[in-house]
Image (cartoon, rainbow, N blue to C red; front, side, top):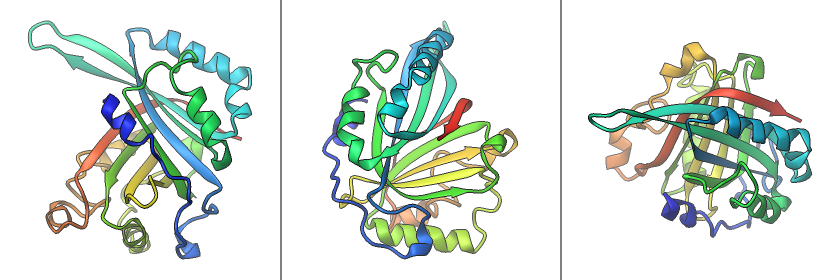
Length: 237
C-alpha cells in the first residue's frame, strides 16, 4: 500500500477545471479532502481515544479542517487460525491553502496518525447534503481512474438528475478530483445503516461508474481502492 500513497504524493494544486455551476456547491480550489485507513490491531478504542484527544485540543481545527468523519471496520485473516484485524477509517475536509500543513501533520509523526495503509488527497468539487449527519451511520470511500474527470463528473451529475442514485439513499456525498490533470475520481458517501447494501464496492455495477461495459470501453478505469466502515465520529464545523 505504501506505493499507492506515494502515487498521490505528487498531487497538483493547480485547481479543479471549470465546470458547470450545477455540478457542485463548493468553489473550486477552496477545499480539499483526504481519506486514510490505519491498522490498529485489536485496540481501536485506544486509537480513537488519541484521535478524540487531538480533536479536543483543536489539532484538526488549527489545520483548517472543517469536516471530519471516522469509522472502524474489521477483517479476518488466516486459513486455519483466524485473526481479527481492526482498522480505523478517516476522512478530513480542509481548506486547500493548508495542504502542505495538513500533509506534514498527517505524515505519521503525530499519534494516532501512524503510517497509513492508504492515503488519498483530492480537490473537492461537490459537497451535497441530503438527509444530514443525523442519518449517517456508515462511511464509504472509493477512488478510481477516469480518462477525463470533467466528462465523468458531467455524466455522474446527469445520472443523479435522472434518479440513478435515488436507491443509494445517501445522507451526504462528497466528490473530489484526485491529482487534477491525471483524471482520478474520489468519492465519499455517508449512509444510513439500512442503506449500506445499496453500494457495491467492487465498482462493477450501477450506479457509480456504469459497470463493466464502460470499463471495457475505456470510459472508466478499474478501481484503485474502496472502504466501508461503521461511523463512530462525524463532525462539521
